[in-house]
Length: 206
Image 1 (cartoon, helix red, strand yellow):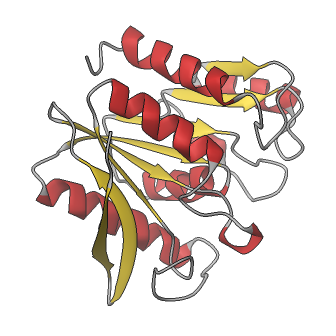
Image 2 (tube, helix red, strand yellow):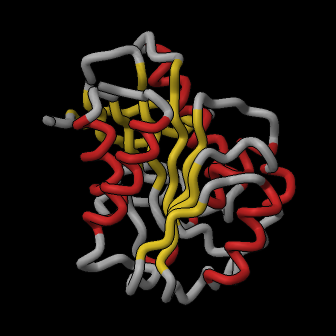
C-alpha cells in the first residue's frame, strides 16, 4: 500500500512521517528503534509491522522521532519523544481515525510505554523487543494495558526468561520468535505472522 510523506507538529517542531490511508476506521501508529543508534522509521521491523497492519485494512503512520531524518529538534531521551507520539496521534485523529493501535519496536516500545503509563489510552498496545536490559522499564505500570509482546529468544537487550516473567506479571501474551536476536534479520515474517494472528484473534481489521 502506498505511503505518502507527511509532516505534523510536536509542540513547536515539525516531525516527518509516512502515512497510508486504509479502508476502515482503524489506525496504527508505529514507532522506531533508538534514535542515537541509527534507528529510524525506515527499519525492517517497522516495515514488517506496517505491512501487516496495511494488509488488514488499517491506516498506518510511522514517523521519525525528533532529530532523525527530516524531523526537527534533537534527541531528548524519551521526554520530547513522548510528545512526538502524541503529535502523531493528533495527526491520525485529524484524519478522523480514533480507533488507534500503538505499536513500537525497541526504543519505540519504551517511549510508547511512557505515553501509556502517563494515562494515554489506545485501542491496543503492542511491543516488539522492549529492551528491558538496556532502558529503565517499569512494566508493572502496564498491567492490563498491553495486548501483545513479541521478542526473539536470542535478544541481546531483552532476556527472554526475564521477559516471560514480566509478561506473566502484567497479564500480557508473549510470542517468541525462535532463533531471532534483537534485530530480526531474516525473521521479519515471524513478526508479521504473530501480529496478524493477534489482530485476527481480537477481531481487528479485515
